Length: 328
Image (cartoon, rainbow, N blue to C red):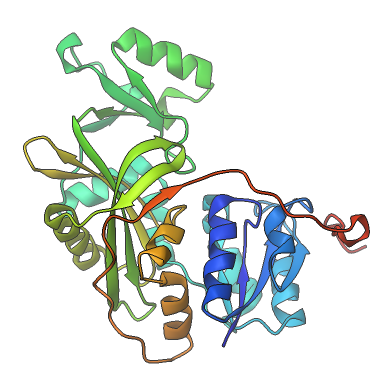
């Protein structure tokens, strides 16, 4: 099996990735900027790194790849996706990096540009404008969601009931008006879908999940087959040619129309639920990246739910890793 470098070992998505890869028999090298991240101590090997925005992050990652003879790298959080070009340059294309193509990553990270791209492709999205360009909105257009155009997942989202609410929220957020979106509020059922696509742009699976409770991350979700949601995911794949994993956030309106709320160009915090439902997308994409034949797996177990809770591990004090420090 492969030796895989995963990031964000202190996060839900990082721990889920480590467990899913080890479950499939892979050797995991986990990294995080915080030496007290629990995931570092459940992985086979671990190291600390600087923040992704640090000048030395790409070289630190490259050194770990060389030290542990890593076969595949999986960046898991948004700040790292913003630095993909630097990471690829540091690695000199010696190992696969499991993300969609860089141009698409850049477009999708900016939620306003993403809405324009999706709309141009004919994909359904809620009406969206910048907070600085909202003079046309009338009181009857509310409520509307307000959120940063560049953000981590769905954090920082607020339901405004008037333009005054919007202005107060933007002022409190300290974002410029040009950096905040106002988006149509649609009544319906929210879904999060994992669209598993190889670097060769082969679609392997789509796993759709209903998300009744979400507070930044999925608190309670359940695998649910929804033909309209799945069909829209297929349209996303065909329109965007991602060449990597996507997490598509959608809402199924009360009239049965699906809309795309946003697309994260990476694995998701609920990827572990995808694995539990029978589709280990981490394993599938690692093996595909290394040239193995993998089966298209369009089926998953329905009615599998996820609940999150706090757990703990115990380690010796002298086994705590040291924080990353630059070489002098």
